[in-house]
Length: 180
Image (tube, rainbow, N blue to C red; front, side, top):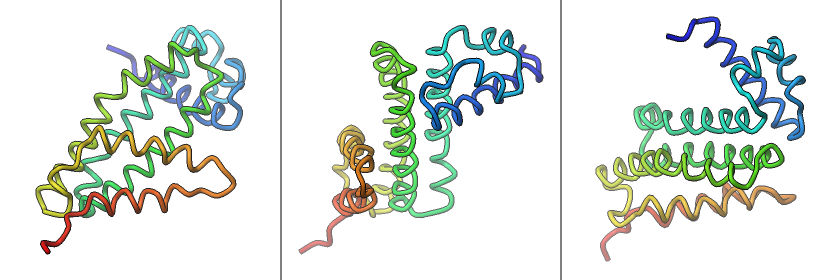
Protein backbone atom coordinates (compact mmCIF):
# COMPACT_ATOMS: atom_id res chain seq x y z
CA UNK A 1 0.00 0.00 0.00
CA UNK A 2 1.47 3.35 -1.05
CA UNK A 3 1.39 6.02 1.65
CA UNK A 4 -0.70 9.09 0.93
CA UNK A 5 2.33 11.42 1.15
CA UNK A 6 4.17 9.23 -1.37
CA UNK A 7 1.14 9.37 -3.71
CA UNK A 8 0.98 13.16 -3.31
CA UNK A 9 4.72 13.49 -4.04
CA UNK A 10 4.34 11.36 -7.16
CA UNK A 11 1.37 13.45 -8.35
CA UNK A 12 3.26 16.71 -7.69
CA UNK A 13 6.31 15.41 -9.55
CA UNK A 14 4.20 14.38 -12.55
CA UNK A 15 2.44 17.77 -12.62
CA UNK A 16 5.74 19.66 -12.31
CA UNK A 17 7.33 17.51 -15.02
CA UNK A 18 4.34 17.99 -17.35
CA UNK A 19 4.60 21.78 -16.97
CA UNK A 20 8.41 21.95 -17.09
CA UNK A 21 8.75 19.71 -20.14
CA UNK A 22 5.97 21.61 -21.95
CA UNK A 23 7.86 24.88 -21.38
CA UNK A 24 11.33 23.47 -22.05
CA UNK A 25 11.86 19.95 -23.35
CA UNK A 26 15.37 19.97 -21.88
CA UNK A 27 14.33 20.81 -18.29
CA UNK A 28 16.64 18.99 -15.88
CA UNK A 29 15.59 16.48 -13.25
CA UNK A 30 16.80 18.94 -10.57
CA UNK A 31 14.62 21.73 -12.02
CA UNK A 32 11.65 19.38 -11.97
CA UNK A 33 12.34 18.32 -8.36
CA UNK A 34 12.57 21.98 -7.30
CA UNK A 35 9.36 22.83 -9.12
CA UNK A 36 7.60 19.88 -7.44
CA UNK A 37 8.92 20.89 -4.02
CA UNK A 38 10.67 17.56 -3.43
CA UNK A 39 14.28 16.58 -2.95
CA UNK A 40 16.28 14.89 -5.71
CA UNK A 41 16.19 11.61 -3.73
CA UNK A 42 12.38 11.58 -3.76
CA UNK A 43 12.34 12.31 -7.48
CA UNK A 44 14.85 9.55 -8.32
CA UNK A 45 13.13 7.06 -5.99
CA UNK A 46 9.93 7.53 -8.03
CA UNK A 47 11.56 7.97 -11.43
CA UNK A 48 15.11 6.59 -11.71
CA UNK A 49 15.69 8.17 -15.13
CA UNK A 50 14.51 11.17 -17.08
CA UNK A 51 13.02 8.78 -19.63
CA UNK A 52 11.03 6.95 -16.91
CA UNK A 53 9.65 10.32 -15.80
CA UNK A 54 8.71 11.37 -19.35
CA UNK A 55 7.00 7.99 -19.94
CA UNK A 56 5.03 8.37 -16.69
CA UNK A 57 3.93 11.88 -17.68
CA UNK A 58 2.70 10.57 -21.01
CA UNK A 59 0.97 7.52 -19.49
CA UNK A 60 -0.76 9.77 -16.94
CA UNK A 61 -1.99 11.95 -19.80
CA UNK A 62 -3.32 8.95 -21.76
CA UNK A 63 -5.19 7.72 -18.67
CA UNK A 64 -6.70 11.18 -18.15
CA UNK A 65 -7.84 11.47 -21.77
CA UNK A 66 -9.20 7.95 -22.15
CA UNK A 67 -10.91 8.21 -18.75
CA UNK A 68 -12.78 11.37 -19.79
CA UNK A 69 -15.08 9.60 -22.28
CA UNK A 70 -17.95 8.65 -19.92
CA UNK A 71 -18.16 12.20 -18.55
CA UNK A 72 -18.13 13.70 -22.05
CA UNK A 73 -20.85 11.32 -23.26
CA UNK A 74 -22.96 12.09 -20.18
CA UNK A 75 -22.85 15.81 -20.93
CA UNK A 76 -23.15 16.11 -24.71
CA UNK A 77 -24.22 14.32 -27.90
CA UNK A 78 -21.71 11.74 -29.24
CA UNK A 79 -20.40 13.83 -32.16
CA UNK A 80 -19.79 16.83 -29.89
CA UNK A 81 -18.17 14.56 -27.28
CA UNK A 82 -15.94 13.16 -30.04
CA UNK A 83 -14.98 16.71 -31.11
CA UNK A 84 -13.99 17.70 -27.54
CA UNK A 85 -12.18 14.42 -26.90
CA UNK A 86 -10.25 14.59 -30.19
CA UNK A 87 -9.21 18.20 -29.54
CA UNK A 88 -7.84 17.06 -26.16
CA UNK A 89 -6.05 14.13 -27.82
CA UNK A 90 -4.47 16.42 -30.42
CA UNK A 91 -3.16 18.71 -27.65
CA UNK A 92 -1.71 15.67 -25.87
CA UNK A 93 -0.04 14.49 -29.07
CA UNK A 94 1.59 17.90 -29.46
CA UNK A 95 2.84 17.69 -25.87
CA UNK A 96 4.09 14.13 -26.45
CA UNK A 97 6.19 15.38 -29.30
CA UNK A 98 7.46 18.11 -27.00
CA UNK A 99 8.81 15.32 -24.80
CA UNK A 100 10.81 14.13 -27.80
CA UNK A 101 14.26 15.11 -26.59
CA UNK A 102 13.61 13.34 -23.27
CA UNK A 103 12.88 10.03 -24.97
CA UNK A 104 14.79 7.50 -27.03
CA UNK A 105 13.21 6.15 -30.23
CA UNK A 106 12.52 2.91 -28.34
CA UNK A 107 10.63 4.82 -25.65
CA UNK A 108 8.56 6.61 -28.29
CA UNK A 109 7.69 3.20 -29.75
CA UNK A 110 6.82 1.83 -26.29
CA UNK A 111 4.57 4.83 -25.59
CA UNK A 112 2.72 4.36 -28.85
CA UNK A 113 2.25 0.64 -28.27
CA UNK A 114 1.20 1.12 -24.65
CA UNK A 115 -1.39 3.80 -25.43
CA UNK A 116 -2.85 2.29 -28.63
CA UNK A 117 -5.28 -0.12 -26.93
CA UNK A 118 -6.75 2.38 -24.43
CA UNK A 119 -7.05 5.10 -27.10
CA UNK A 120 -8.78 2.73 -29.56
CA UNK A 121 -11.14 1.62 -26.74
CA UNK A 122 -12.02 5.26 -26.00
CA UNK A 123 -12.66 6.02 -29.69
CA UNK A 124 -14.77 2.85 -29.95
CA UNK A 125 -16.88 3.99 -26.99
CA UNK A 126 -17.46 7.40 -28.60
CA UNK A 127 -18.24 5.98 -32.05
CA UNK A 128 -20.54 3.29 -30.62
CA UNK A 129 -22.56 5.94 -28.76
CA UNK A 130 -23.04 7.82 -32.04
CA UNK A 131 -23.90 4.65 -33.95
CA UNK A 132 -26.46 3.82 -31.27
CA UNK A 133 -28.19 7.22 -31.46
CA UNK A 134 -27.94 7.28 -35.27
CA UNK A 135 -25.64 10.32 -35.52
CA UNK A 136 -22.52 8.39 -36.64
CA UNK A 137 -22.24 6.06 -39.64
CA UNK A 138 -22.32 2.38 -38.79
CA UNK A 139 -19.14 1.74 -40.80
CA UNK A 140 -17.04 4.25 -38.82
CA UNK A 141 -13.84 2.50 -37.74
CA UNK A 142 -11.80 3.49 -34.64
CA UNK A 143 -8.47 2.66 -36.32
CA UNK A 144 -9.30 4.82 -39.34
CA UNK A 145 -10.36 7.66 -37.06
CA UNK A 146 -7.12 7.46 -35.05
CA UNK A 147 -5.04 7.50 -38.22
CA UNK A 148 -6.89 10.60 -39.46
CA UNK A 149 -6.28 12.39 -36.16
CA UNK A 150 -2.54 11.96 -36.73
CA UNK A 151 -2.84 14.63 -39.42
CA UNK A 152 -4.49 17.01 -36.96
CA UNK A 153 -1.58 17.47 -34.56
CA UNK A 154 0.80 17.95 -37.48
CA UNK A 155 -1.52 20.59 -39.01
CA UNK A 156 -1.39 22.62 -35.83
CA UNK A 157 2.36 23.15 -35.83
CA UNK A 158 2.46 25.73 -38.62
CA UNK A 159 1.77 29.46 -38.42
CA UNK A 160 -1.97 28.79 -38.64
CA UNK A 161 -3.71 26.02 -36.66
CA UNK A 162 -5.75 24.24 -39.33
CA UNK A 163 -6.73 21.36 -37.04
CA UNK A 164 -10.23 22.67 -36.05
CA UNK A 165 -11.26 22.96 -39.72
CA UNK A 166 -9.77 19.59 -40.53
CA UNK A 167 -11.51 17.99 -37.53
CA UNK A 168 -14.83 19.47 -38.72
CA UNK A 169 -14.29 17.77 -42.10
CA UNK A 170 -13.49 14.44 -40.44
CA UNK A 171 -16.58 14.66 -38.20
CA UNK A 172 -18.78 15.62 -41.15
CA UNK A 173 -17.58 12.45 -42.86
CA UNK A 174 -18.69 10.41 -39.84
CA UNK A 175 -22.25 11.76 -39.82
CA UNK A 176 -25.00 9.51 -41.07
CA UNK A 177 -26.22 10.69 -44.44
CA UNK A 178 -29.93 11.19 -45.05
CA UNK A 179 -31.46 8.56 -47.33
CA UNK A 180 -31.70 9.80 -50.92
